[in-house]
Length: 284
Image 1 (cartoon, rainbow, N blue to C red):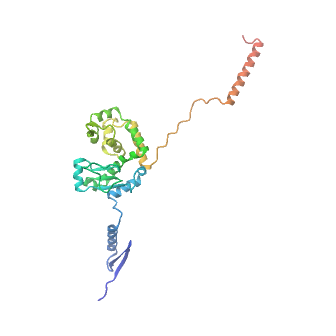
Image 2 (image 1 turned 90 degrees about the vertical axis):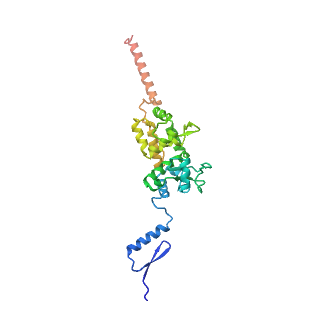
Image 3 (image 1 turned 45 degrees about the horizontal axis):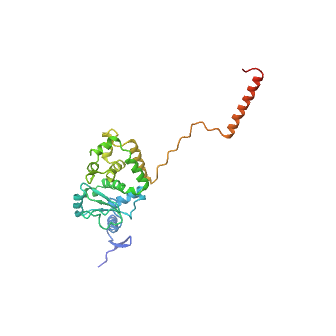
């Protein structure tokens, strides 16, 4: 009985045998499937790939994060149940490397020493665009470890409009987490909740622009908008804003030693002429 011919194809380090009469298109598809199954590279739409692409595209994040010190995980059903109880309403949570959590709701396991993004919403994990925006925004929480970013953030916090400060006090801002935020029964004066304002504008999340329009440009002050644009630019480039060059002075320059000498000579000449006029009886 004749042996059927085979096609031997090398894929990576593997040799794969295909029936000799198999069409090339089917061979190509089988090779692609084999590569996908044996590849260590996550799919482009996976949370890990999205995180890595954001870090690669935003040099400002590189001052704090890297693929080795930052991870992302999808919570299992048990963790999602805990999240609904202790972190209600959150589809994604940022855990700084130093945060241990509580005994009831500890940080994700096997992630010690890393900043971690934990996804609780199954819907969010499947929506690439929304997940990218959420990851991008949550990474800003940990940027306080960058002195330049922290300086800009502090400036932002010091430039709220009186109208927005009053809305914050009365719990009627455009951000639910700001309105509901309390620690030991008192309002949080400073903390991650206010990053909602920062990430909302930079990541172009709906409430920030909506609130600015509805408040007639009092949700953000002009100075805050200027700071936010600088922060956004820093995330993208990793470069600080160049200082604005001052206009050349238009004031009259001070007299130099040479010009002072010329003036003295003129004064001396005028005095000599005046003496001559007096001697000639031409002055009183």
